[in-house]
Amino acid sequence: MSEISLVTGANGLLGSNLVRALRAEGVQVRASVRDASRSGPAAGLGAEIVYADLMNPGSLADALAGVDTLYQVAGVFRHWSPDPRRDIVLPNVEGTRNVLQAAARAGVRRVVYVSSSSTLAPPPGSGQVNERDWRSDFFGNHYARAKTQAERVAWEVAGRMDLDMATVLPSTIVGPAYGPLALSMTLLDRIVRGKLSVAPDLHFTYIDVRDVAQAMIAAAGQGRAGERYLLAGDRAISVTRLAELARQVSAQARVPRLMPAPAALAAATVMEGLARLTGRPPALLRSQVRLWCGASITYDTSKARAELGWQPRTSEQAVRECLAYLSDSRSRAGARASSLLSDAPERLGG
Image (cartoon, rainbow, N blue to C red):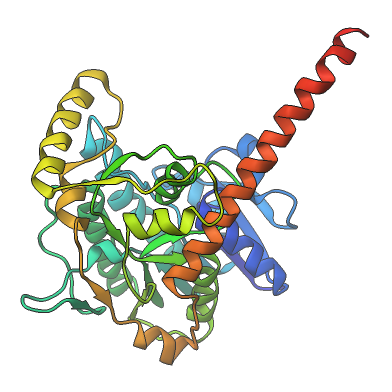
């Protein structure tokens, strides 16, 4: 029988791109989703679509039956919730525990687990991060805390149940989206549409989703069990530079006016207060300002390059391609809307 690879979270940005990359290499793929009626991003690729919910252990045994390699992608990617423990921390931590325990019971040969660069922080006095630098200060960011706790649980389960596992730690992922726009791409989308007039001096280290998918496939084949692999772009890119790049592909884009960090913290405080009243996510969090405002962190990806043969796009190249993709998507959507409007009188007239 052909070896089966299970990709959890197959409807997401990374999951759907990973399914495509595996299918392009002729791999037999089982793609798990929480709602089979909304499997569009993973549909039509020759993959077997199955139901699995990491918080429903009973659904995992069937999804993992006969699986050789588990790509554990599924997780909650949110930075804010009215109840962060319920909505962000527990799904990531307990979902990790559930799926890895089920994988061990199912006899899965290899696990590639997706963690995050947010689990890392530079040592005091250093601006460079590598896989050994676990974060201990989360600045109140529930996502960073949840991903760190979840990966630590992953290693505990892997050690206790003798799972052959490697983890990958991507930085901010962007690229072709086959479903709803990922949270990591909303900033770029707002800039492309000219919807960002003022912003803190945020810096993000972008990586193309296709490069992450290729590194994961390499980690499954040649990564060392028990190792973490940091997958990040070569440098952080500021909001100002993002806007400058966006102006090359979009007439609507404009460079936002930068807010000093104290003003950004004050604004975020007000936004969080309103969010608690309305239940709607704030546009900016204090933890985001503290984590990424003026950030000068660089990531050491030499381990992934040496052991996985990884050769990613630069951060700027990843951003350029993503901005062009978003601009083209907006243009196509506008053309379709225009076509529908121009056809409307004929259709209404019978």
